[in-house]
Image (cartoon, rainbow, N blue to C red):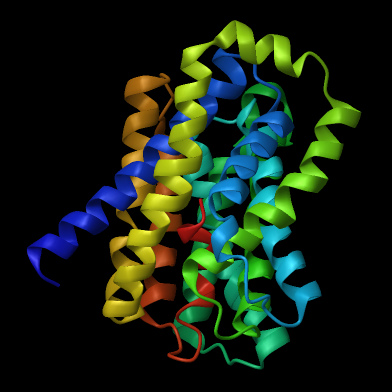
Length: 298
């Protein structure tokens, strides 16, 4: 990989890390309802990506389901989880999406897992459980991180289903993610949340800037750059570089939101990321795209 493309990969990981921290600030510091935040984000994406909706991918039910799981459904859980989860712990738990994708690929795509990838899966789950463990509050695991895990699982299912849908260009897929997400999220925020508009107006330009960053810079710019890189280089070269994303998120969480990073967190993070690295290095060539899709759409 040349220096320019490595710098772009570094930029993508940085933007995704910043987005996790920004999301935490939006749903806690600004107290913006999470479902409303997700709905407005994907409303902007859907509006801007309208020119790429056609031709309609077939079958349409699959692209709608994949779009909702990977977009609004997954991020609704993610933003809800961020109300109580720290950015650094969320970054680590999100990595569980990779072993979940691998396991689903065995069931749905008929792939095989050999002992090295099995070891990587086990290590990732052990590390994730250590991070999710919440001994201070007397609970087995953090409730916010359970929602983050649900978000990762939704993205994993969508990633494997996307593997069964071929020929969808990146911007066309983004358009259908936005369309499949905005309508159900609009109904969900209207039915389960209150004071969305007053809180958004009270937050003012800070919320508007965060929203535009999430929709334009993260959803459209960062993901488009990543699509280009994954099309140019082998997945087994790109995937290990993705370790930079959770590491950056942990660092930014400590510096910006004051995340606690004790021995348990350090141990869990190290074990989980080692497991992720083993999985990515041992991944089968038949599924390079599906296993990485969830990271691309964060």
